[in-house]
Length: 251
Image (cartoon, rainbow, N blue to C red; front, side, top):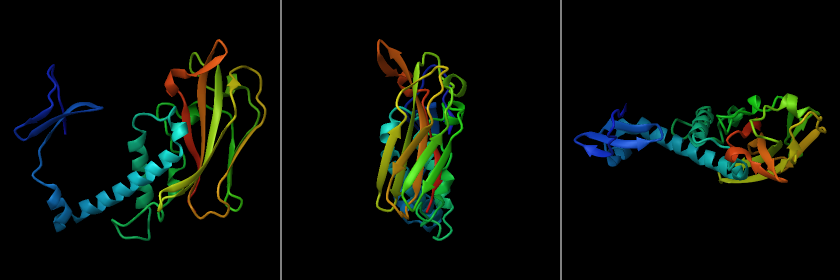
């Protein structure tokens, strides 16, 4: 793959070279003689088919998680979140020590490897919220919770310029990757002013299925707002918002 340079970017095919546009600019690559039918049937491409099957499962698993968290991701995710999440899902699948290559899946993999994933790489939770917090996933009761001691926002929140308020958001998610279904519970702290007055102790809890055997995900994030004439507006369409998988229980 080569990057096009010059004042006349090209799109299309000239000879054996394809010219096309991506988020990274105008690129060029040589046409390949390998067709779809050969990849699907030629024994020489067995590894390619196996990789493709597992990549497809990673993409499907990521989609279920994204769908469950859609209401939070609308104001948080960066433009490359989808590809980053798929890459991490591939690591989960590759950790499957039960099934053969090509048949590995998220169900038998290590979902806990997703812990710490940031949905907005441009604004991470650890660089926006400095207040300490504790997390807990209780499989027996089906409760997922976040506890945050009282803190002073001006000291513990790295607010972007123009922000007057913030909100802590959280979600508890139970996902059945095999059937592509989920149970999700979402809650938040309510709008809090960015000032020198300490907050109350914040306890946010979520209820999913008790005694579940499915992977459980606990999410925590922060959203910033600007108050104008009594109304609060999301700051720069959520560019500074953060959302992270703070705790994951695979099974």
